[in-house]
Length: 442
Ligand code: PFF
Image (cartoon, rainbow, N blue to C red; front, side):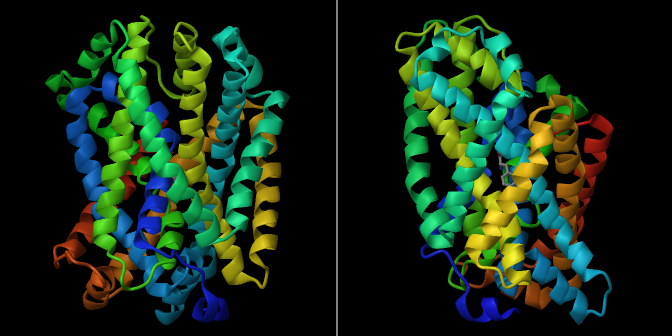
């Protein structure tokens, strides 16, 4: 334990603030641009079966593991892994301990580039310009070019300003305000979308289960990748959030609540996007083109398009920034625990380095894609695996269960250990292997 950890470690001030921050981290672009597409493309309601199953397994094991690891060491994964390795006389704790931080830093870099695009589309919406553009041409002339750089910078600066304010005054406060507003906007937009003529076709596409897809391995693989990315497992961010809570916080319940609200938001996003897309007879797409080409096209055909479109992109900004702060907090915490830097200096240093490293990616979509794939398929799941192995193989069973169940009204039983040791660790290895085989599954 470092001096800083023992004496003046920051922390969440309330359970509500902690849960909002975890939901904020989990609920992000992944819920919006990937989930809606996958739900429709992989069998409608039938997709929910593997998806719920994986989210349940990953939240009951992965999230509990990461929160507990952080709370136990009162530190992020860098210090936690180091301490554990030293105790067990194992070598290379410093290098291995750094990998989860590197993974989340990589996610922060490519994520902020996309947040920059969202900021730009929000600006286009409030100025009303969104209704005049040719969405296809506009997006290809903007993304991957130098015009996106100022927006990437803005995304980094907004995140920096929140993280610099600290855990309680920055991250917790942001999430407590922004998340409830986000849900209200989502519910409003869902009713708006469902009231469009022809929307029911989209609803049918989402809810009528096509059971035969469950026989296709790809459905299960896509559900696994989606679930893994959405609960924000990296072996770093959620460990750091866990290190900011005390022994009264109920980790198993918080993990489940995070998964439930994250899934709810993903379902809401699907019922906003897909019915509207069907109402205007446009084919649903995935990823960037869904958000920046298809959806703006839908808005163009609606009355009050700039108001609806502004609300939509504002809610995505809220979802994305509440995730990006959890990413930046990862390397900032590592730096704070390993050096004597102040939070202000550490946050600025990490942000500047990430911005500079992101510049070549911001102007080259091919490189951006390769980088994002490497991070999400290889580096980040390796970070998850490291923490999972440390937790389930280097802790003794009694200590592990005691650490998980401290403060819990619904303590987990001893079944938790084999579930983590075999099911969770194997699932994480599978995510890496399948990601390498299929290119990208998240
Ligand atoms: N869960 C976020 C999303 O679905 O967009 C992404 C994410 C956030 C991944 C935070 C990792 C992380 F640490």
